[in-house]
Length: 330
Image (cartoon, rainbow, N blue to C red; front, side):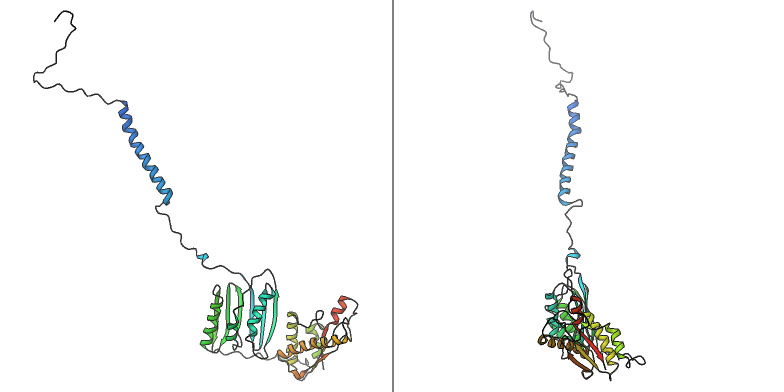
């Protein structure tokens, strides 16, 4: 050892002469933390990606396809009830229309199919709150069913029902197909039958013993008094139609009876106006009775103007009573 020099360390040697083994440091805390945190971080990233996929595609993968809604295929309708019933030459209309225009479409369609002597019994009411079937294009239906003596068309909600006795399968198919085409957005139910026997009109009910002898009382009981009319009018109301139908039945049951139909007015007009107007009122009643089977020779029509008032003409109520038709049996 030299003087003043620090200690020197000689390189270590081994008996075998191999190089010394390098130093291996032990695992510390940071490594342990990394081993735990990194897998958790990877798992979190994967879960987040999966969650976003679910949010986009839905809980079971791809977004479901919506089936077409069965209720959107056709709108639902709730139409006002209506019946059109033919009985021989009589066609009875019963139901509601929202306005006169809608009713006029029906009348136009019917008028093109009416046979001579046909009579329409109009019991249509105007109700602005309802929806009614559109008859603008219904003319062919009524023309092709004109020879069906018991044809009927009824409306209930969204269903149209056709019934009656067709003369042939072709007529049945034609009428039903035309209705289905005209009202393709509604349910058309065809109940027409072919070649079934048409029941003959029911004979008038046999009059009770002595009924013809007291026919005036029987008619008075039905009418409840004279048939009255609006100011300057000569049209019959649905209620008048029902009353006069019963009067016709009683006159038909007594073919030897005769009836005078006397028409009257109030005194608000001149005789030049009152006489023709009173005659129109009497003739309207007589025409209805004839259309319902009364022999015209049984009836005598008279227009008497403002004579023989049954109430004072100086009140509204009195004048309304004097605008009347009386049926006098002889």
